[in-house]
Length: 93
Image (cartoon, rainbow, N blue to C red):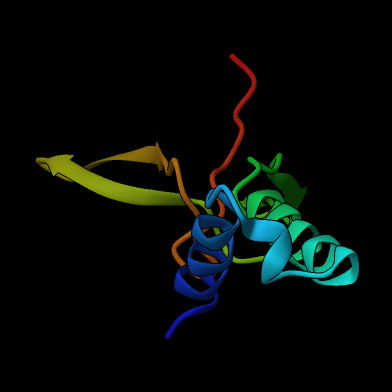
């Protein structure tokens, strides 16, 4: 069971009418902290310019790749997600 599945299961248990019979206040606080941590992992991060390349603000993996358009023409492609850690990338428009 992944962390996501585990926390979703815990949260589902808190939706029952009689959740207080099964969970102490400290357990509810633990569930809230775990859910918050998962949500934080999904927040978009700004890329960082590092030695002429844009990298993920969390793990440092490149988030701009070169792709060939044809006839020797290359273009930068900004990625919406980091291919290494999976975090969304927040580009300034």
